[in-house]
Amino acid sequence: MWKWWRCLRRQEQGGPSSSGSRPDKADTEDYPAEWPDERWEELLEQWAGGISRYGLELPVLLLGEAHKPVSFVLGQGLYFLQPFLGAADHFVPALGGPGVPALAALLSERRRLEQLLVKLERRARR
Image 1 (tube, rainbow, N blue to C red):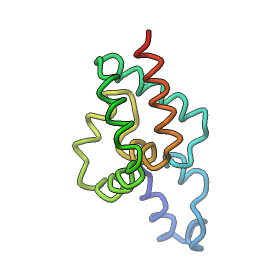
Image 2 (cartoon, rainbow, N blue to C red):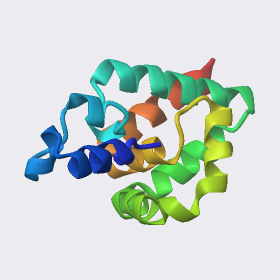
Image 3 (cartoon, helix red, strand yellow):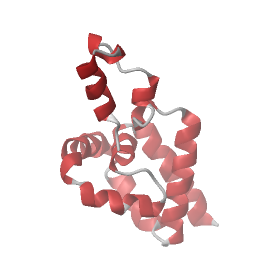
């Protein structure tokens, strides 16, 4: 989950984030949209492995391809509903991931979704 409380605490204490500028690297360390590509590769491999472990490659591929045109809207909806989806955070890590914010970032960026679908296709063909 995002470490937003660090930003708020620093603002209250008059720290570096109080100027209204972007938070420093320590504040965005757990913000999935700003992760480096290497970290995303690891996460996508974990998710693909978890999906394969449960034998869900085909359903995820079908849903992913079918919902690609609206994936950005779905991702933004997850960001909006994140406070209410606390229970869902328990299910997404079961597939090997950090939770709803990473899933929302995945859906919000089509290239990340495409990378996951390609990894799943390769695993399904084995």
